[in-house]
Image 1 (cartoon, rainbow, N blue to C red):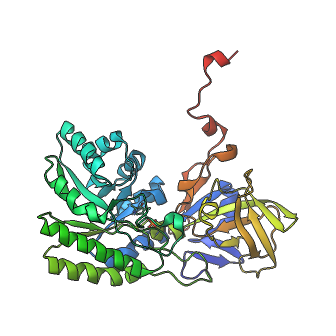
Image 2 (image 1 turned 180 degrees about the vertical axis):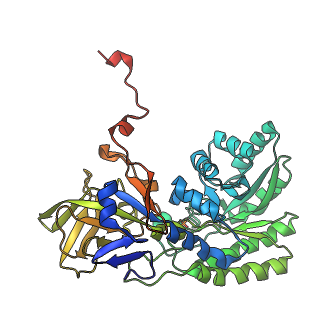
Image 3 (image 1 turned 30 degrees about the vertical axis):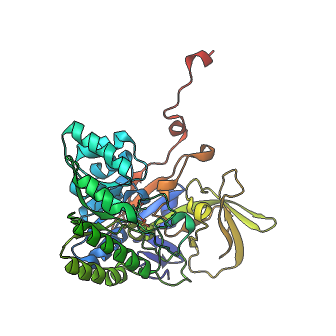
Length: 428
Ligand SMILES: *Cc1c(COP(=O)(O)O)cnc(C)c1O
């Protein structure tokens, strides 16, 4: 019914996730509610077995829930972290430091110190950052292994806000400068340059962009090797897209990606005479379709169009507003009914832009109904906010046997006050 998502089923008209009834979950845990299928998450990670010996570093920014990170750690995942906070989460989840890469285009000095002290690898984004990191490593008397984030100058077909490998992007070192920076690192006593890193963007549905990036990276690996640098790791980043719209073209699978990329890496490595370890950093393709967002209808209003007002808006799911993205919507207690009307689905936030779906065909929707947004596991909760005095929602994990457990409680008013102080002079 929902493409290849066999964790989502319809029984007696009701949407179930891993056997758990979504209407009952909304009743028990309240809404808005993120619900993750543990089994689907594991399956998605295992789909990357197509890359056999490559290391898979999960991009923590896609979903930083500790229980999910713990499941991925059990599956053997490493982590791509972008801040001290994400490094903290990854290590709490039990991801070994040897499989953590600290990324970022503008890292604080304190983050570089933390990375050096904790013994993770760092993806260096500029020559200046290399110097700051070298000083941090020296003062701690540690040697830090580094990769260089390369700007590969690759044009990809995706939303402009999530294309990260363009020549004009803020990320990475222009590829013409990479060999020089590598040399600079080789001469630095507390830095050990071990490889090259790129990440060309997100929600990419065209394998050829990855193949092009792999070729560009191997060109650089050849140049670095000629300059006596040692290339032990090639990290191609993440970015594989998923099929959000059931009517659209299916997305390439990790196996399709492997079929495109692996031959390039293997042939070129053999030519150059190196045998680098391949690293991937999938986020979305691991976690997006493992999770649905349950929301309740507060109101239905016939106006210029028929508006359905939910208890979740862009404070809970920012992607439609940020990237004009499509999330498929299912009416949870009539999931087998045909569409009866066109609805514009909006959130409770005081912004006209708080629209989650326009002119969407759905079965008849009434106040009190529970709607599910599919494919909400990536950049869903992790981008949520407390805007408009809304606490962030709860998260639930559904096990293989259909049992549901709370993995993050919903925030309430006290969470909105957390960290705030009224200066005593204002008290009376
Ligand atoms: C965001 C990001 C990823 C993950 O991208 P997805 O599209 O979610 O797979 C991987 N690596 C880096 C460096 C990133 O910034």
